[in-house]
Each structure stands twice: as structure tokens, then as C-alpha cells.
Amino acid sequence: MAPLPGRGLAKGLAVTLRTMTRRSVTAQYPEVQPELPPRTRGVIGLLEENCTVCMLCARECPDWCIYIDSHKETLPAVDPNARARTRNVLDRFAIDFSLCMYCGICIEVCPFDALFWSPEFEYAETDILELTHERDRLREWMWTVPAPPALDPAAEEPKEIAAARKSADKLAAAAAAAAAAENAEEQQDT
Ligand code: SF4
Ligand code: SF4
Image (cartoon, rainbow, N blue to C red; front, side):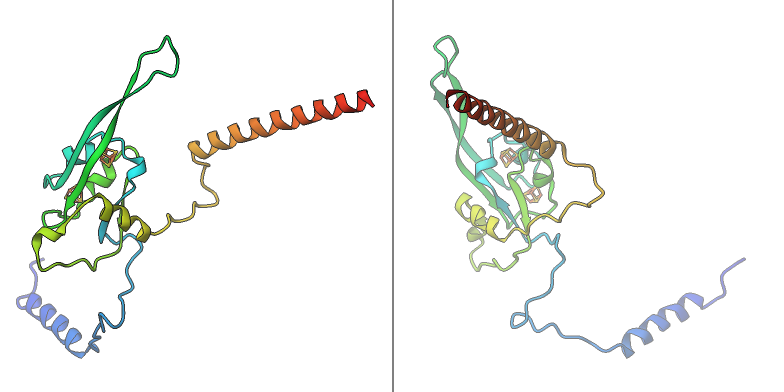
């Protein structure tokens, strides 16, 4: 059936009327801070300790606004028969927030959980160059990253936690067995 003529206009007017009669609310920012959803994309925090300088985030960033510099360091071999090892040392990690489009790809692709969203958004600058946050500033944002939500009580235990618990249980059992053996020896001596 063909739509009635003027139906769209009536619908549009109804929306206008509804909006006109609704009470307007003024957000009193900055006196009153807004209540932001927990997954707000405000700024990116860097947990430098987790970064292995794999460069994945910089390569995947569609805006090319992540700058990473590093050098290789040779570590002496732990065993005389082993080879010396090399590792990447981070020299520079910076994000240019004047280019960033807050897509979150860098956070998604980081295999080592080194990047996180923080809901902080008050970092406007009058000089655009100041919007490039270097590693120290990115590290500071980590203090504003909210704790992850609690696991669903019915959810399966994450395999990392299960593995850690298994190792802890093994160590505790070995320590208990050693203590019991020591006690038994002491009793035999007395
Ligand atoms: S959020 Fe997107 S645009 Fe911004 S740094 Fe990460 S990957 Fe690049
Ligand atoms: S993807 Fe993660 S670990 Fe790799 S360089 Fe980026 S922040 Fe560091």
C-alpha cells in the first residue's frame, strides 16, 4: 500500500513538538563533572613495563600518529654454552592526539596489554604541539584507567589465572611436604 501523502511531514512535526515541550537540561560543566560511561575513550595510557617494542600498534594505527624509537641491547648469556640474548629497549613512545581519531585499534592489537583507555578528556591545549604526549605523560594517564569490571561469577576461569593457581598450589604442596619431612626427621632424632 502506498504511504499516505504528508505522513512523513506529520511525523517530523510530531518529533519537533515533542522536543519543544521537553525540559532542557544544562550541564554545569566544569563546575559539575559529567558522569561518563565506564568505557569512555578519553585518552590512551601506556603501561611501559608491558611494552616489548613490537611496533604492532604503530604499524596498525590508521593515522600514523604513534611514534616509537628503540635500540637493541645485548644481554650476557645465562649459561656458558648459550648464546647472548638481545632485547628491544624503548627510547621514545609518543602519541599525537591532534591526529588520533580514537578508533582504539592500537589498544585492540597490542598483544602485551600495554595500552589502555582512560576516560580523562581534559587535556586541551592552545599549542597543537603539546597534544603529542610523550611516554612519561602516557604513563601518568595509567593512574586514571578504571579497574576492569569483575568477572561474571558463572564465567569460566581465565586460563592465565588457572595456570598461575596451579603453579601456586604445586609450590604450596611442595613446601608443605618439605616441612612435614623436616618435622618427621626432628621427631625421629628426639
Ligand atoms: S586510537 Fe586509533 S588513531 Fe589513535 S593512536 Fe590508536 S590506532 Fe592511532
Ligand atoms: S603493540 Fe603494545 S607491545 Fe607492541 S609496541 Fe605497541 S604498545 Fe608496545
